Image (cartoon, rainbow over all chains, first blue to last red):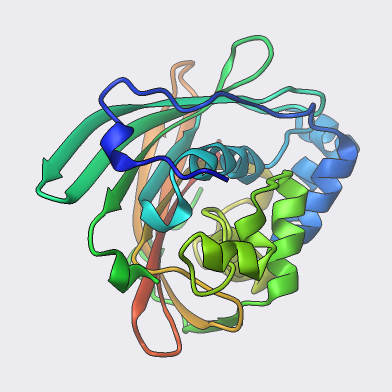
Amino acid sequence: MKEIRFEDLNVGSEMPKLVKLPIDQVQLVKYAGASGDFHPLHCDPAFGKKVGIGQIAHGMLVMGFAGEALTNWISKKHLRKLSVRFVGMTRPGDVVIVTGKITEKKQEGEQYIVWGEIVARNQKDEMLLSGSFEAARLDTSGHK
Amino acid sequence: MADQTAVGKEFPPFTWEVERGKIREFVQAIGDKNPIYTDKEAAVRAGYKDSPTPPTFPIVLVMWTNMLWETFSAAKINFERALHGEEIYEYYQEIYPNDVLIGRMKIVGMETKFGGTGGKMDIIRLEILYTNQRNEPVLKAMTVLVERK
């Protein structure tokens, strides 16, 4: 995987869009097992019905997609902060689309810091998650 | 109604040893095919010591140790009415397989808000600081839970 250079990241630079496969029940089962989050709202469609909001996917799965999109673009080792708000409910069958861009950049000599926004929407263009990130190429030796 | 007196509560430190297989399981569930997470050699070529953990991996620690559920009972949050509002991670160092992390969790805030439709909700804020086996801070995780009325 080719690493993006901080020199090439500028305000307005867009993250390559990530379009996920539709979330199915199997993925929710896998994510429940991997994360340890067995909340019945995610795992049991009957429970969702009972509490009146229906089955929803784990917000953290959608944040996982955001992390995937982000670290496909900017190396994980440069990531300093990832912050998200879960603003919509993600349903089984939803296709999650993650986009993002750089909103601020600071350069001091060889050192760079970038800030950006990241958004996940579904196939109906409804916002699921909205967040921000910070990445830096500072002293890489300390980050190994 | 969440219990306001739980604000400031600190939980006993919890320990988690990072396993390589758990990282693989986690990225497979997400469908993240970045080889650095599953292939040590690819990670080393990309400038890591070993396969790093992906950005949202810390959720595994609070869920599999049941620590998140501990906060639900400590703050008397109704499990059936709770939603995840926000999640924030600050990364200080990479977390690698075989690292032994200690998490210190605290309930840092609670407030009642009124939603757009007049519905009442409690906002509960948690913070966890993780250190590694060298007692170095590696990560801060902040979680916002929403309890609908």
